[in-house]
Length: 383
Image (tube, rainbow, N blue to C red; front, side, top):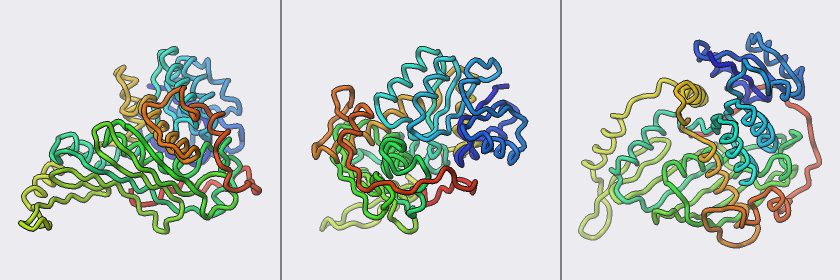
Protein backbone atom coordinates (compact mmCIF):
# COMPACT_ATOMS: atom_id res chain seq x y z
CA UNK A 1 0.00 0.00 0.00
CA UNK A 2 1.62 3.21 -1.21
CA UNK A 3 1.41 6.30 0.98
CA UNK A 4 0.36 9.42 -0.92
CA UNK A 5 0.87 13.13 -0.25
CA UNK A 6 -0.74 15.88 -2.30
CA UNK A 7 0.94 19.27 -2.42
CA UNK A 8 -1.49 22.04 -3.31
CA UNK A 9 -5.23 22.16 -2.56
CA UNK A 10 -6.48 24.02 -5.62
CA UNK A 11 -9.00 22.80 -8.16
CA UNK A 12 -6.65 20.36 -9.90
CA UNK A 13 -6.10 18.55 -6.59
CA UNK A 14 -9.70 17.34 -6.85
CA UNK A 15 -9.00 15.01 -9.75
CA UNK A 16 -5.88 13.64 -8.05
CA UNK A 17 -7.81 12.91 -4.86
CA UNK A 18 -10.64 11.25 -6.80
CA UNK A 19 -8.16 9.10 -8.73
CA UNK A 20 -6.31 7.95 -5.62
CA UNK A 21 -9.62 7.16 -3.95
CA UNK A 22 -10.63 5.07 -6.98
CA UNK A 23 -7.40 3.09 -6.48
CA UNK A 24 -7.83 2.79 -2.70
CA UNK A 25 -6.81 -0.89 -2.66
CA UNK A 26 -3.28 0.10 -3.76
CA UNK A 27 -2.71 3.50 -2.15
CA UNK A 28 -3.80 5.76 0.68
CA UNK A 29 -3.73 9.57 0.94
CA UNK A 30 -1.78 10.34 4.13
CA UNK A 31 -1.05 14.06 3.85
CA UNK A 32 -2.33 17.20 2.15
CA UNK A 33 -0.20 20.37 2.10
CA UNK A 34 -1.07 23.93 1.18
CA UNK A 35 0.14 27.36 2.32
CA UNK A 36 -3.56 28.14 2.89
CA UNK A 37 -4.09 25.46 5.54
CA UNK A 38 -7.80 26.18 5.91
CA UNK A 39 -8.22 25.50 2.21
CA UNK A 40 -6.54 22.10 2.62
CA UNK A 41 -8.71 21.29 5.62
CA UNK A 42 -11.82 22.13 3.62
CA UNK A 43 -10.62 19.78 0.89
CA UNK A 44 -10.25 17.00 3.47
CA UNK A 45 -13.80 17.54 4.65
CA UNK A 46 -15.12 17.57 1.10
CA UNK A 47 -13.59 14.17 0.31
CA UNK A 48 -13.75 12.61 3.77
CA UNK A 49 -9.98 12.34 4.03
CA UNK A 50 -8.52 11.17 7.33
CA UNK A 51 -5.04 12.52 6.65
CA UNK A 52 -2.58 15.05 8.04
CA UNK A 53 -2.83 18.67 6.88
CA UNK A 54 0.28 20.86 6.86
CA UNK A 55 1.10 24.35 5.64
CA UNK A 56 4.80 23.65 5.02
CA UNK A 57 5.56 20.70 2.75
CA UNK A 58 9.06 20.38 4.22
CA UNK A 59 7.42 18.59 7.15
CA UNK A 60 6.71 15.70 4.77
CA UNK A 61 10.20 15.18 3.32
CA UNK A 62 11.37 12.70 5.97
CA UNK A 63 8.06 10.90 6.41
CA UNK A 64 8.68 7.16 5.96
CA UNK A 65 5.00 6.50 5.31
CA UNK A 66 4.90 8.67 2.16
CA UNK A 67 6.03 7.09 -1.10
CA UNK A 68 4.46 9.18 -3.87
CA UNK A 69 3.75 12.92 -4.00
CA UNK A 70 1.37 14.67 -6.38
CA UNK A 71 2.56 18.22 -7.09
CA UNK A 72 -0.50 20.41 -7.75
CA UNK A 73 1.12 23.84 -7.36
CA UNK A 74 1.36 26.81 -9.75
CA UNK A 75 4.01 26.01 -12.41
CA UNK A 76 6.54 28.51 -11.07
CA UNK A 77 6.65 26.55 -7.79
CA UNK A 78 7.06 23.09 -9.32
CA UNK A 79 10.83 22.86 -9.53
CA UNK A 80 11.77 23.58 -5.92
CA UNK A 81 9.18 21.23 -4.44
CA UNK A 82 9.81 18.45 -6.97
CA UNK A 83 13.57 18.59 -6.43
CA UNK A 84 13.15 18.51 -2.64
CA UNK A 85 10.94 15.42 -2.70
CA UNK A 86 13.01 13.58 -5.32
CA UNK A 87 16.22 14.17 -3.39
CA UNK A 88 14.43 12.78 -0.33
CA UNK A 89 13.78 9.60 -2.33
CA UNK A 90 10.06 10.23 -2.85
CA UNK A 91 8.48 9.41 -6.20
CA UNK A 92 6.80 12.46 -7.76
CA UNK A 93 3.94 12.99 -10.18
CA UNK A 94 4.10 16.64 -11.24
CA UNK A 95 1.20 18.47 -12.82
CA UNK A 96 1.74 20.06 -16.19
CA UNK A 97 3.39 22.22 -17.32
CA UNK A 98 6.51 20.61 -15.87
CA UNK A 99 8.31 23.93 -15.22
CA UNK A 100 8.63 27.40 -16.78
CA UNK A 101 12.16 26.76 -18.10
CA UNK A 102 14.33 24.01 -19.52
CA UNK A 103 16.94 24.68 -16.86
CA UNK A 104 14.40 23.83 -14.16
CA UNK A 105 13.29 20.71 -16.07
CA UNK A 106 16.90 19.54 -16.19
CA UNK A 107 17.30 20.12 -12.45
CA UNK A 108 14.21 18.00 -11.81
CA UNK A 109 15.44 15.17 -14.04
CA UNK A 110 18.85 15.26 -12.34
CA UNK A 111 17.21 15.14 -8.90
CA UNK A 112 15.29 12.01 -9.87
CA UNK A 113 18.55 10.29 -10.80
CA UNK A 114 20.28 11.48 -7.63
CA UNK A 115 17.46 10.36 -5.35
CA UNK A 116 16.78 7.09 -7.15
CA UNK A 117 13.11 8.01 -7.46
CA UNK A 118 10.67 8.14 -10.36
CA UNK A 119 9.47 11.40 -11.88
CA UNK A 120 6.25 11.48 -13.87
CA UNK A 121 4.66 14.52 -15.53
CA UNK A 122 0.91 14.73 -15.98
CA UNK A 123 -0.35 14.41 -19.55
CA UNK A 124 -3.66 12.73 -18.84
CA UNK A 125 -5.02 13.01 -22.38
CA UNK A 126 -2.76 10.16 -23.46
CA UNK A 127 -5.00 8.00 -21.29
CA UNK A 128 -8.11 8.53 -23.39
CA UNK A 129 -9.10 5.39 -25.33
CA UNK A 130 -9.38 6.98 -28.78
CA UNK A 131 -6.10 8.85 -28.33
CA UNK A 132 -4.29 5.68 -27.28
CA UNK A 133 -5.79 3.89 -30.30
CA UNK A 134 -4.68 6.73 -32.58
CA UNK A 135 -1.11 6.37 -31.30
CA UNK A 136 -1.18 2.62 -31.98
CA UNK A 137 -2.62 3.19 -35.46
CA UNK A 138 0.12 5.68 -36.36
CA UNK A 139 2.80 3.38 -34.98
CA UNK A 140 1.44 0.54 -37.13
CA UNK A 141 2.52 2.41 -40.27
CA UNK A 142 -0.88 2.09 -41.95
CA UNK A 143 -0.90 5.81 -42.83
CA UNK A 144 2.37 5.47 -44.73
CA UNK A 145 4.78 8.40 -44.72
CA UNK A 146 3.51 11.27 -42.57
CA UNK A 147 3.51 14.57 -44.47
CA UNK A 148 1.71 17.16 -42.35
CA UNK A 149 0.17 17.59 -38.91
CA UNK A 150 -1.69 20.36 -37.11
CA UNK A 151 -2.76 20.88 -33.51
CA UNK A 152 -5.53 23.37 -32.72
CA UNK A 153 -5.51 24.10 -28.98
CA UNK A 154 -8.45 26.47 -28.92
CA UNK A 155 -9.99 27.61 -25.63
CA UNK A 156 -12.06 30.51 -24.29
CA UNK A 157 -11.32 32.33 -21.05
CA UNK A 158 -12.84 35.59 -19.77
CA UNK A 159 -11.00 38.46 -18.12
CA UNK A 160 -11.74 37.17 -14.59
CA UNK A 161 -9.61 34.12 -15.28
CA UNK A 162 -6.48 36.25 -14.88
CA UNK A 163 -7.53 37.82 -11.59
CA UNK A 164 -6.09 34.87 -9.65
CA UNK A 165 -2.86 36.08 -8.03
CA UNK A 166 -0.39 33.81 -9.85
CA UNK A 167 -1.97 33.93 -13.31
CA UNK A 168 -1.15 36.34 -16.09
CA UNK A 169 2.48 37.15 -15.26
CA UNK A 170 5.61 35.74 -16.85
CA UNK A 171 7.28 35.43 -13.46
CA UNK A 172 4.54 33.58 -11.56
CA UNK A 173 2.67 31.69 -14.29
CA UNK A 174 5.50 31.18 -16.75
CA UNK A 175 3.52 31.89 -19.91
CA UNK A 176 0.08 32.19 -21.47
CA UNK A 177 -2.10 29.91 -23.56
CA UNK A 178 0.90 28.18 -25.18
CA UNK A 179 2.33 27.20 -21.80
CA UNK A 180 -0.76 26.61 -19.67
CA UNK A 181 -3.36 25.36 -22.17
CA UNK A 182 -1.64 24.09 -25.30
CA UNK A 183 0.65 21.97 -23.12
CA UNK A 184 -2.03 19.25 -23.38
CA UNK A 185 -1.99 19.15 -27.15
CA UNK A 186 1.73 19.77 -27.55
CA UNK A 187 2.45 16.65 -25.48
CA UNK A 188 0.12 14.62 -27.70
CA UNK A 189 1.54 16.20 -30.85
CA UNK A 190 5.12 15.25 -30.00
CA UNK A 191 4.09 11.78 -28.79
CA UNK A 192 2.36 11.12 -32.10
CA UNK A 193 4.83 12.86 -34.43
CA UNK A 194 8.31 12.42 -32.92
CA UNK A 195 11.26 14.75 -32.53
CA UNK A 196 11.41 18.32 -33.84
CA UNK A 197 14.02 19.96 -36.06
CA UNK A 198 12.95 23.63 -36.08
CA UNK A 199 10.21 26.07 -35.05
CA UNK A 200 9.14 29.59 -36.05
CA UNK A 201 6.41 31.41 -34.12
CA UNK A 202 4.49 34.57 -33.28
CA UNK A 203 2.48 35.38 -30.13
CA UNK A 204 0.07 38.17 -29.15
CA UNK A 205 -2.40 39.27 -26.48
CA UNK A 206 -5.63 40.25 -28.23
CA UNK A 207 -8.26 40.42 -25.51
CA UNK A 208 -7.03 39.93 -21.92
CA UNK A 209 -6.21 43.29 -20.35
CA UNK A 210 -5.22 41.99 -16.89
CA UNK A 211 -2.47 39.76 -18.25
CA UNK A 212 1.14 40.20 -19.29
CA UNK A 213 1.15 36.93 -21.22
CA UNK A 214 -0.10 35.86 -24.64
CA UNK A 215 -3.63 34.71 -25.39
CA UNK A 216 -2.85 33.49 -28.93
CA UNK A 217 0.17 31.90 -30.63
CA UNK A 218 0.83 30.47 -34.09
CA UNK A 219 3.81 28.20 -34.72
CA UNK A 220 5.15 26.39 -37.76
CA UNK A 221 7.27 23.29 -37.27
CA UNK A 222 9.54 20.88 -39.10
CA UNK A 223 10.05 17.41 -37.62
CA UNK A 224 13.16 15.28 -37.80
CA UNK A 225 11.16 12.86 -39.98
CA UNK A 226 10.76 15.56 -42.64
CA UNK A 227 7.08 16.15 -41.87
CA UNK A 228 5.90 19.72 -41.38
CA UNK A 229 3.25 21.00 -39.01
CA UNK A 230 1.57 23.83 -37.16
CA UNK A 231 0.35 24.52 -33.64
CA UNK A 232 -2.30 27.16 -32.97
CA UNK A 233 -3.08 28.06 -29.35
CA UNK A 234 -5.78 30.52 -28.33
CA UNK A 235 -8.01 31.64 -25.46
CA UNK A 236 -10.31 33.44 -27.91
CA UNK A 237 -12.32 30.61 -29.46
CA UNK A 238 -15.97 30.41 -28.42
CA UNK A 239 -16.86 26.72 -28.31
CA UNK A 240 -13.34 25.54 -27.49
CA UNK A 241 -13.00 23.25 -30.51
CA UNK A 242 -9.72 21.39 -30.18
CA UNK A 243 -8.33 19.07 -32.81
CA UNK A 244 -5.24 17.24 -34.02
CA UNK A 245 -4.93 16.37 -37.72
CA UNK A 246 -2.31 14.01 -39.17
CA UNK A 247 -2.03 13.54 -42.94
CA UNK A 248 -0.14 10.58 -44.38
CA UNK A 249 0.42 9.09 -47.81
CA UNK A 250 -2.40 6.55 -47.41
CA UNK A 251 -4.91 8.43 -45.28
CA UNK A 252 -5.61 11.00 -42.59
CA UNK A 253 -6.49 10.54 -38.92
CA UNK A 254 -7.96 13.16 -36.60
CA UNK A 255 -8.55 13.55 -32.88
CA UNK A 256 -11.48 13.64 -31.97
CA UNK A 257 -11.64 10.46 -33.99
CA UNK A 258 -12.12 10.66 -37.72
CA UNK A 259 -10.39 8.55 -40.35
CA UNK A 260 -10.33 9.41 -44.06
CA UNK A 261 -8.68 8.04 -47.19
CA UNK A 262 -8.71 9.30 -50.76
CA UNK A 263 -7.32 8.16 -54.09
CA UNK A 264 -6.93 10.19 -57.22
CA UNK A 265 -9.01 10.13 -60.34
CA UNK A 266 -7.29 10.37 -63.72
CA UNK A 267 -7.41 14.17 -63.49
CA UNK A 268 -5.84 14.22 -60.02
CA UNK A 269 -9.01 15.10 -58.14
CA UNK A 270 -9.95 12.92 -55.12
CA UNK A 271 -12.47 10.16 -54.71
CA UNK A 272 -13.04 8.10 -51.54
CA UNK A 273 -10.74 5.13 -51.00
CA UNK A 274 -13.27 3.04 -49.12
CA UNK A 275 -11.01 0.00 -48.88
CA UNK A 276 -8.20 1.92 -47.16
CA UNK A 277 -10.63 3.75 -44.89
CA UNK A 278 -12.16 0.43 -43.79
CA UNK A 279 -8.69 -0.96 -43.15
CA UNK A 280 -7.89 2.03 -40.95
CA UNK A 281 -11.18 1.84 -39.06
CA UNK A 282 -10.91 -1.92 -38.54
CA UNK A 283 -7.38 -1.56 -37.17
CA UNK A 284 -8.41 1.36 -34.96
CA UNK A 285 -11.30 -0.64 -33.54
CA UNK A 286 -9.14 -3.69 -32.87
CA UNK A 287 -7.09 -2.01 -30.16
CA UNK A 288 -8.25 -2.74 -26.60
CA UNK A 289 -10.10 -0.32 -24.35
CA UNK A 290 -8.47 1.21 -21.28
CA UNK A 291 -9.43 0.09 -17.78
CA UNK A 292 -8.44 3.45 -16.28
CA UNK A 293 -8.74 6.79 -18.06
CA UNK A 294 -7.59 10.40 -17.85
CA UNK A 295 -5.94 11.34 -14.54
CA UNK A 296 -6.96 8.03 -13.01
CA UNK A 297 -5.28 6.23 -15.90
CA UNK A 298 -2.06 8.17 -15.45
CA UNK A 299 -2.01 7.78 -11.68
CA UNK A 300 -2.62 4.04 -12.03
CA UNK A 301 0.25 3.91 -14.53
CA UNK A 302 2.50 5.76 -12.06
CA UNK A 303 1.57 3.40 -9.23
CA UNK A 304 2.25 0.40 -11.47
CA UNK A 305 5.66 1.85 -12.40
CA UNK A 306 6.55 2.11 -8.70
CA UNK A 307 5.24 -1.37 -7.91
CA UNK A 308 7.11 -2.97 -10.84
CA UNK A 309 10.17 -0.69 -10.85
CA UNK A 310 9.52 0.34 -14.45
CA UNK A 311 9.22 3.70 -16.19
CA UNK A 312 5.87 5.53 -16.22
CA UNK A 313 4.44 6.34 -19.66
CA UNK A 314 5.21 10.05 -19.26
CA UNK A 315 8.62 10.60 -17.65
CA UNK A 316 10.48 13.77 -16.78
CA UNK A 317 12.25 13.53 -20.14
CA UNK A 318 8.86 13.49 -21.90
CA UNK A 319 7.70 16.48 -19.86
CA UNK A 320 10.87 18.33 -20.85
CA UNK A 321 10.22 17.73 -24.57
CA UNK A 322 6.92 19.57 -24.26
CA UNK A 323 8.58 22.49 -22.47
CA UNK A 324 11.29 22.51 -25.15
CA UNK A 325 8.73 23.20 -27.88
CA UNK A 326 6.98 25.86 -25.78
CA UNK A 327 10.33 27.49 -25.01
CA UNK A 328 11.14 27.48 -28.73
CA UNK A 329 7.83 29.21 -29.47
CA UNK A 330 8.65 32.02 -27.04
CA UNK A 331 12.26 32.32 -28.14
CA UNK A 332 11.28 32.52 -31.80
CA UNK A 333 8.41 34.94 -31.17
CA UNK A 334 10.41 37.36 -29.01
CA UNK A 335 13.69 37.27 -30.97
CA UNK A 336 12.18 37.01 -34.46
CA UNK A 337 14.45 34.07 -35.30
CA UNK A 338 13.90 30.42 -36.15
CA UNK A 339 14.83 28.00 -33.35
CA UNK A 340 16.60 24.71 -34.04
CA UNK A 341 16.62 21.59 -31.87
CA UNK A 342 17.78 20.30 -29.49
CA UNK A 343 17.68 23.31 -27.15
CA UNK A 344 20.11 23.61 -24.27
CA UNK A 345 22.29 25.98 -22.30
CA UNK A 346 23.35 27.77 -25.51
CA UNK A 347 19.82 29.11 -25.94
CA UNK A 348 18.89 32.47 -24.41
CA UNK A 349 15.54 31.18 -23.18
CA UNK A 350 17.03 28.06 -21.52
CA UNK A 351 16.73 29.81 -18.14
CA UNK A 352 13.78 31.64 -16.66
CA UNK A 353 16.04 34.71 -16.40
CA UNK A 354 16.56 34.61 -20.15
CA UNK A 355 12.82 34.42 -20.80
CA UNK A 356 12.07 37.27 -18.40
CA UNK A 357 14.72 39.45 -20.04
CA UNK A 358 13.08 39.29 -23.48
CA UNK A 359 9.39 38.44 -22.98
CA UNK A 360 6.98 41.20 -23.99
CA UNK A 361 4.60 42.31 -21.21
CA UNK A 362 1.49 42.85 -23.28
CA UNK A 363 -0.47 44.48 -20.43
CA UNK A 364 0.09 45.32 -16.77
CA UNK A 365 -1.65 43.07 -14.26
CA UNK A 366 -3.68 45.38 -11.99
CA UNK A 367 -6.28 43.06 -10.37
CA UNK A 368 -5.45 40.15 -8.08
CA UNK A 369 -7.40 37.80 -5.78
CA UNK A 370 -5.96 35.14 -3.47
CA UNK A 371 -8.48 32.41 -4.23
CA UNK A 372 -11.64 31.63 -6.10
CA UNK A 373 -14.45 29.60 -4.57
CA UNK A 374 -13.86 25.86 -5.03
CA UNK A 375 -16.04 25.35 -8.08
CA UNK A 376 -13.94 22.53 -9.49
CA UNK A 377 -11.55 22.45 -12.42
CA UNK A 378 -13.28 23.05 -15.77
CA UNK A 379 -11.71 21.24 -18.67
CA UNK A 380 -13.73 22.30 -21.68
CA UNK A 381 -13.47 21.64 -25.37
CA UNK A 382 -13.63 18.70 -27.72
CA UNK A 383 -10.35 16.96 -26.85
